[in-house]
Image 1 (cartoon, protein in one colour):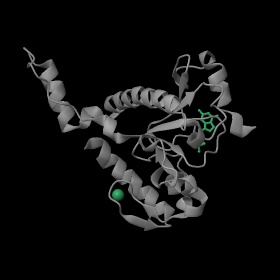
Image 2: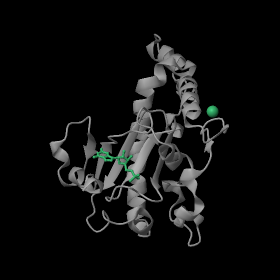
Image 3: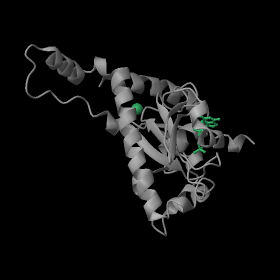
Length: 219
Ligand code: 5GP
Ligand code: ZN
């Protein structure tokens, strides 16, 4: 069924073009999310057959496995940051200074630091995944996408329903273990960037997200 569709990427990653499968190795497949909820949205799929059908909270109880996944998400975070730099970096003042220094003759010994795009990437899992195969989201913070069409889309990436990979292993009594009780998806909207509240006014939130996106990428 539809909930099993991520399985195909794990089974035969080599059959996809690079705009679908970003890379694959023996243990992981990295893909582009088909319905991105941010301007950049990737998924990391562990290929371990004993884990792929597990809920992330259970799969990550295995400390060795968790460390492996964390290490791989770091690789992907880095790759995603590079992609943001390529997409948006040219506009930023820091990047302009960096480019100018790079092309100077002779170039300076120390290059100005570019913007650290890794800080603009979030990595984590949904407390209640909709797709059956274990996957980790790697996405830019903007939540700016045509595919972000429903209230729950925004809140699933902007409330504790989204559990950052850094937070694992979860404590025994972590409230996020019982996500339905918390009503995260029905919560009032809060802008990820300026914390402004939008009640349940989705259209207004969407307009605001576009403004924030423009400012964020130029920062
Ligand atoms: P979940 O809510 O399960 O954590 O997220 C599943 C993700 O998989 C969603 O972001 C959704 O857009 C994405 N997705 C659903 N079906 C497909 C598919 O067939 N291919 C790809 N590449 N992504 C998919
Ligand atoms: Zn805002």
